[in-house]
Length: 170
Image (cartoon, rainbow, N blue to C red; front, side, top):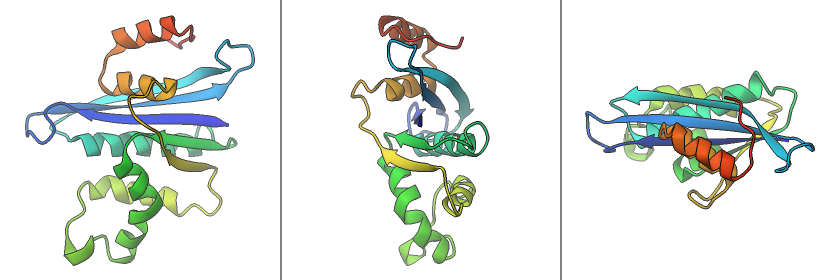
Protein backbone atom coordinates (compact mmCIF):
# COMPACT_ATOMS: atom_id res chain seq x y z
CA UNK A 1 0.00 0.00 0.00
CA UNK A 2 1.44 3.34 -1.08
CA UNK A 3 0.67 6.30 1.17
CA UNK A 4 0.86 9.65 -0.61
CA UNK A 5 0.79 12.73 1.60
CA UNK A 6 -0.05 16.14 0.20
CA UNK A 7 0.14 19.69 1.49
CA UNK A 8 -0.15 23.20 0.15
CA UNK A 9 0.91 26.54 1.56
CA UNK A 10 0.72 30.21 0.70
CA UNK A 11 2.33 33.13 2.48
CA UNK A 12 0.04 36.11 3.02
CA UNK A 13 -2.92 34.08 1.76
CA UNK A 14 -5.29 36.36 -0.12
CA UNK A 15 -2.63 38.99 -0.89
CA UNK A 16 -2.17 39.50 -4.62
CA UNK A 17 1.64 39.48 -4.23
CA UNK A 18 1.88 36.26 -2.25
CA UNK A 19 3.79 33.14 -3.16
CA UNK A 20 3.13 29.57 -2.24
CA UNK A 21 4.05 26.00 -2.83
CA UNK A 22 2.92 22.43 -2.60
CA UNK A 23 4.52 19.21 -1.48
CA UNK A 24 3.84 15.55 -2.14
CA UNK A 25 5.53 12.66 -0.37
CA UNK A 26 5.03 9.00 -1.34
CA UNK A 27 5.89 6.37 1.26
CA UNK A 28 6.12 2.68 0.41
CA UNK A 29 6.53 -0.30 2.76
CA UNK A 30 10.10 -1.39 3.36
CA UNK A 31 10.78 -4.25 5.79
CA UNK A 32 14.49 -3.40 5.84
CA UNK A 33 13.88 0.12 7.12
CA UNK A 34 13.70 0.92 10.84
CA UNK A 35 10.50 2.87 10.23
CA UNK A 36 8.90 0.11 8.14
CA UNK A 37 8.68 2.36 5.10
CA UNK A 38 10.86 4.40 2.82
CA UNK A 39 10.38 7.65 0.99
CA UNK A 40 9.92 6.68 -2.62
CA UNK A 41 9.18 10.08 -4.09
CA UNK A 42 9.12 13.73 -3.03
CA UNK A 43 7.74 16.43 -5.31
CA UNK A 44 7.45 20.12 -4.62
CA UNK A 45 6.99 23.30 -6.57
CA UNK A 46 6.45 27.02 -6.05
CA UNK A 47 4.02 29.49 -7.61
CA UNK A 48 3.70 33.27 -7.47
CA UNK A 49 0.41 35.05 -6.81
CA UNK A 50 -1.45 32.04 -5.46
CA UNK A 51 -3.62 30.92 -2.56
CA UNK A 52 -3.41 28.14 -0.01
CA UNK A 53 -6.39 26.29 -1.54
CA UNK A 54 -4.85 26.42 -5.00
CA UNK A 55 -1.62 24.90 -3.67
CA UNK A 56 -3.58 22.21 -1.79
CA UNK A 57 -5.35 21.37 -5.06
CA UNK A 58 -2.05 21.27 -6.97
CA UNK A 59 -0.70 18.80 -4.40
CA UNK A 60 -3.82 16.62 -4.70
CA UNK A 61 -3.67 16.69 -8.50
CA UNK A 62 0.00 15.72 -8.43
CA UNK A 63 -0.77 12.80 -6.09
CA UNK A 64 -3.63 11.65 -8.31
CA UNK A 65 -1.32 11.73 -11.33
CA UNK A 66 1.17 9.56 -9.44
CA UNK A 67 -1.52 6.93 -8.81
CA UNK A 68 -1.96 6.52 -12.56
CA UNK A 69 1.71 6.67 -13.56
CA UNK A 70 4.30 5.64 -10.97
CA UNK A 71 1.89 3.58 -8.84
CA UNK A 72 -0.76 2.40 -11.30
CA UNK A 73 -0.29 -1.23 -10.18
CA UNK A 74 -0.44 -0.39 -6.46
CA UNK A 75 -3.23 0.44 -4.06
CA UNK A 76 -2.78 4.01 -2.86
CA UNK A 77 -4.14 6.17 -0.08
CA UNK A 78 -3.82 9.89 -0.67
CA UNK A 79 -3.77 11.72 2.65
CA UNK A 80 -4.42 15.44 2.89
CA UNK A 81 -4.78 17.73 5.89
CA UNK A 82 -7.04 19.98 3.78
CA UNK A 83 -10.72 19.43 4.60
CA UNK A 84 -11.47 21.51 1.50
CA UNK A 85 -9.61 19.07 -0.79
CA UNK A 86 -10.94 15.91 0.84
CA UNK A 87 -14.55 17.13 0.90
CA UNK A 88 -14.28 18.48 -2.64
CA UNK A 89 -12.92 15.17 -3.98
CA UNK A 90 -15.21 12.83 -2.05
CA UNK A 91 -18.42 14.87 -2.20
CA UNK A 92 -18.80 18.39 -3.62
CA UNK A 93 -17.23 17.84 -7.05
CA UNK A 94 -20.03 15.47 -8.07
CA UNK A 95 -22.79 18.04 -7.58
CA UNK A 96 -20.65 20.80 -9.08
CA UNK A 97 -20.17 18.76 -12.26
CA UNK A 98 -23.85 17.76 -12.36
CA UNK A 99 -24.84 21.44 -12.02
CA UNK A 100 -22.62 22.63 -14.87
CA UNK A 101 -19.61 23.55 -12.74
CA UNK A 102 -21.34 26.06 -10.49
CA UNK A 103 -22.07 26.01 -6.79
CA UNK A 104 -25.55 26.58 -5.36
CA UNK A 105 -27.11 29.91 -6.33
CA UNK A 106 -24.80 29.96 -9.39
CA UNK A 107 -21.82 30.85 -7.22
CA UNK A 108 -18.43 30.61 -8.91
CA UNK A 109 -16.13 27.69 -8.16
CA UNK A 110 -12.64 29.03 -7.52
CA UNK A 111 -9.73 27.15 -9.10
CA UNK A 112 -12.10 25.50 -11.56
CA UNK A 113 -9.23 24.77 -13.95
CA UNK A 114 -7.64 22.45 -11.37
CA UNK A 115 -10.93 21.02 -10.14
CA UNK A 116 -11.92 19.99 -13.65
CA UNK A 117 -8.57 18.20 -14.04
CA UNK A 118 -9.20 16.47 -10.71
CA UNK A 119 -12.64 15.43 -12.00
CA UNK A 120 -10.96 13.13 -14.52
CA UNK A 121 -9.70 11.06 -11.58
CA UNK A 122 -13.11 10.99 -9.86
CA UNK A 123 -14.66 9.13 -12.78
CA UNK A 124 -12.08 6.34 -13.15
CA UNK A 125 -14.09 3.09 -13.18
CA UNK A 126 -11.82 1.04 -10.95
CA UNK A 127 -9.63 3.48 -9.06
CA UNK A 128 -6.55 2.20 -7.27
CA UNK A 129 -6.72 5.03 -4.74
CA UNK A 130 -8.82 6.78 -2.15
CA UNK A 131 -8.52 10.24 -0.62
CA UNK A 132 -8.59 10.59 3.16
CA UNK A 133 -8.30 13.38 5.69
CA UNK A 134 -5.32 13.38 8.03
CA UNK A 135 -4.89 15.73 10.95
CA UNK A 136 -2.35 18.42 10.14
CA UNK A 137 0.50 19.41 12.45
CA UNK A 138 0.16 16.22 14.47
CA UNK A 139 3.61 14.70 13.84
CA UNK A 140 2.40 12.23 11.22
CA UNK A 141 5.66 11.66 9.37
CA UNK A 142 4.32 11.85 5.81
CA UNK A 143 2.32 14.96 6.60
CA UNK A 144 5.31 16.67 8.20
CA UNK A 145 7.44 15.91 5.14
CA UNK A 146 4.75 17.23 2.75
CA UNK A 147 4.48 20.39 4.88
CA UNK A 148 8.24 21.03 4.77
CA UNK A 149 8.17 20.51 1.00
CA UNK A 150 5.18 22.86 0.58
CA UNK A 151 6.90 25.58 2.57
CA UNK A 152 10.22 24.98 0.76
CA UNK A 153 11.90 24.34 4.10
CA UNK A 154 14.40 21.74 2.95
CA UNK A 155 16.91 22.46 5.75
CA UNK A 156 14.30 21.62 8.42
CA UNK A 157 13.20 18.62 6.37
CA UNK A 158 16.72 17.16 6.35
CA UNK A 159 17.02 17.69 10.12
CA UNK A 160 13.61 16.06 10.68
CA UNK A 161 14.55 13.03 8.57
CA UNK A 162 17.87 12.60 10.38
CA UNK A 163 16.24 12.95 13.80
CA UNK A 164 13.71 10.26 12.88
CA UNK A 165 16.32 8.01 11.24
CA UNK A 166 14.54 8.11 7.88
CA UNK A 167 16.57 7.62 4.73
CA UNK A 168 15.90 10.27 2.13
CA UNK A 169 16.39 10.21 -1.63
CA UNK A 170 18.48 13.39 -2.03
